[in-house]
Amino acid sequence: MNARTLSRAIGQVRRMSTEKPSKVLVSLAGPDRVGIVKDFSSVLHKSHGNVEESRMAQLGGEFAMISLVSIRPSELADFRSELKGIFSDSSLAMRYRSRTKSQKNPAVSISVLNHKIFLPHA
Image (cartoon, rainbow, N blue to C red; front, top):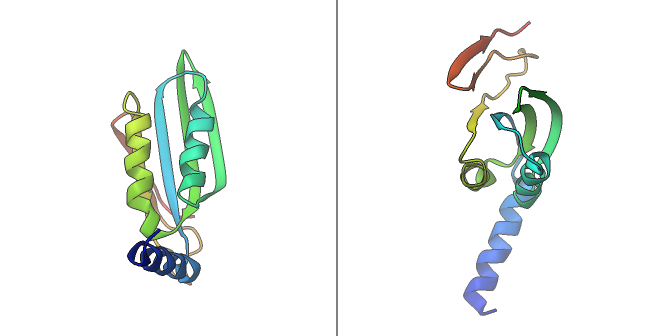
């Protein structure tokens, strides 16, 4: 490892240690197959993210998952790109909306199988 590569790595570690994770809603729906949850979890782990909440269902040979994950904004583009590559045969949607102090449950819009759903905050 040369000095330039080491310097970049140190800078990335510093940004990661000070960058606060954001909550992102991820929905995934498509043909059921072995390893979907494992693949999703591996990509999230590689992006230094965590699953906060998740729901999954298997319906008529299809699999649907909606997960609230926490991930650093700097990791989000790579996370999304890698998910799109692995789940190219599925519908994938990601929504990010920051919360204000007075807003405990923000409104969220999601897209599943190309149908948009709007969930107002409670």
